[in-house]
Amino acid sequence: MAIAIETRDCTALGDSDLAEMADLCAVSSDIYEVGSLSKQAEAWVLVTEARDNGKLRGFSFCTLERIGGTPCVLVGAGHSCRTTRRDTVLRGIVTDQLRRAALSFPDEDVLVGMQINDPGAFEAFKNLHDVVPRPGHKATGEERAWGRRLAKRFGIGSLSYEDRIFTTRGKGGPPVVLDHASLKPEKIQPEAAALLDGLVPADGDTLIVHGWVLAEELEKLL
Image (cartoon, rainbow, N blue to C red):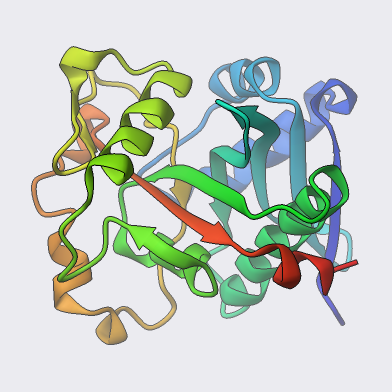
């Protein structure tokens, strides 16, 4: 059976929805409890859910907005199941969020930004362009500026963000990341994994990553 994807307003989430999300996250080191998920629901506008035969298999909070006039998909806390269908779940969630972007920002390129702490989450950027940071690429001044803009939008103070390596330093507690572990970690590029080498996940450290999706690619999702 195909994975069913639905994006809805965070205001529609009830206690049972948050409890279901918390149960799904219990297998991860980035454990989101009902309380922290409730705060995410207050901080973000939309939540995308993936279900297999009615059972929750993944979710991601997000917001569509403009930063300095540039259309963006900003992703908050998210989690994909640890089953063999995790790649399908992640792909479905990302595609639906991009489809929403196509509806909200017609004929415009869109930036996608999020925090990660596992190299597997780079799979969310698989079909995006000019992903930063990425192996072998020296970020330009404008790309570092985007990192700072995203850090500010994510509520990260300037003293906790290292703009040359796109790294945030946490203060404990669960990080607000897209939590996705690769189904085939042996295929992750060592150079990509090295971008996260300095992180201390237990402290809540993250890597801020962004990439672009082109207007003509978004149009194909409608």
